[in-house]
Image 1 (cartoon, one colour):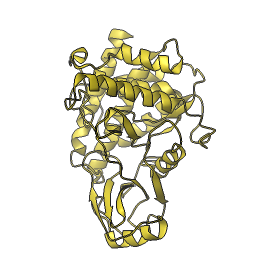
Image 2 (image 1 turned 180 degrees about the horizontal axis):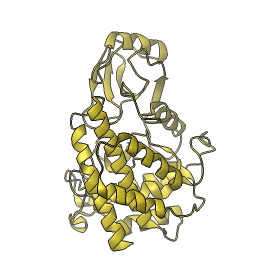
Image 3 (image 1 turned 180 degrees about the vertical axis):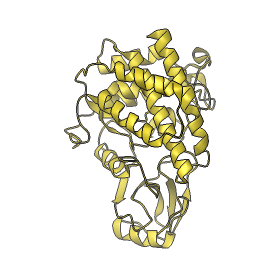
Image 4 (image 1 turned 135 degrees about the horizontal axis):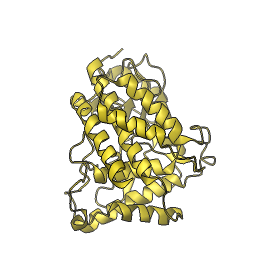
Length: 344
């Protein structure tokens, strides 16, 4: 049984996949993709073609974290919708094979961008790519969850109340030291959770640029990735989480923010323009409680970053820079409090 997140027993894995995936043929070689701190992801090159394997990290995990089985389920459910997803082949829940649960999906050839300023493309392409991300988000929130078999994928209603409780608990479980801006933010959020408005949609949970694979040459998303945090939730959580990138400084972990960037000069929409386009697609007149949704996004990202730092301290993180991510928790909470005090 492999304990190393960077190592797989290739012979054993090839034998297993040949038995469980139609047309799969070994031998295979596995190489870990760089980037990301959550579920270790591998490129599988086999005699029958190229695949992607995502696994839970070995070791003790926070409750409900790294739910690759949920990822597999939601991606499979969305295969015939307007939400672009990769094809999934097999989920292995037997942890004895490689040391943790995993699933295998198709390998998509495309582009992943890490910098929100998209320096690799021209202005007209940037505008088109942001519009495409907006389209994918609206498509996701328009999915009929009952029709695709996901009506039990989460608890409907009181989403932010439940999410606040969940992430506060996970933050406390991962806490390595007291961070005053985070304490202030947690207290404010607890006192300002908006009344439930009845909106329930499929929520991605980590909807951002680098979780989307674009077509090799076109400004078109071919696969929305990393569904680990998906659930039945509130659509504005995804929208605020993506808009948070416009307010973050550069190089916050793996999320490169656009604070102080001349977005208009780059052809990137403003926060107001992005929200307006989303509302147009969804048939909405506007969004109330926007400051809360934004502040909550910073809090949740901070809690996620703290979890990464805790796994690094425990020796279970899959990224060598994981400990550095914990240093962003305080600054992110401070940005959120500045938004609350200045715009609330």
